Length: 237
Image 1 (tube, rainbow, N blue to C red):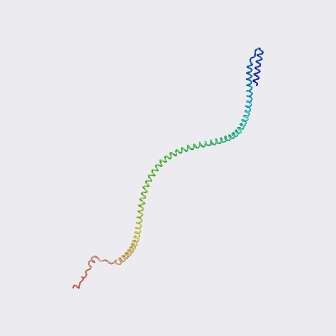
Image 2: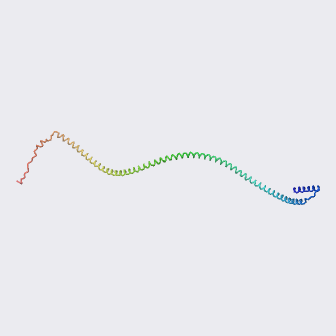
């Protein structure tokens, strides 16, 4: 509407100036054209205003919806902020725990490094021990072979011992018989000794009784007359 008014005023002023100057006005066609354009502009402006009102209504509706959405978002943000604060606190706790775990891990790594060094040293010791064990195994095998030989020798000795034990048992039985015989002989010897003692005593008595007696000499024995009278067979005479 403002554009239309200004445009008409401009055209009217131009026509009046032209008339006052004695110039013939030939702008009817242009005015009609402009009128037509203005009518079109009018319709467009009315349409624009209607669209503007519709747009403003939509903007108001959008604003209301946006405000509701913002309110909901604010509520969500408040909850999220609370959740974020809780998560931040939890995160801080986790960070502290992670730092503690990192320290523990560093300590474990240090211990593992030391343990690895100890294991390497132990591995070297074990290799040395394995060599010693191999040598000891060889020595043990030799000892086992020797023991097997000794075992065989002992088994042979046991057999000999069993044989000797049997022989000893037999000899023991024989010895017992000999012992019994010795006891018998000892008894007889004792008896003989007693007889010898008696004989000795008797010999002493005889010696004392014949101390002043002299035995015959050989000449006296030879001079003894041992001749006898011959046997006479009277039947033959």
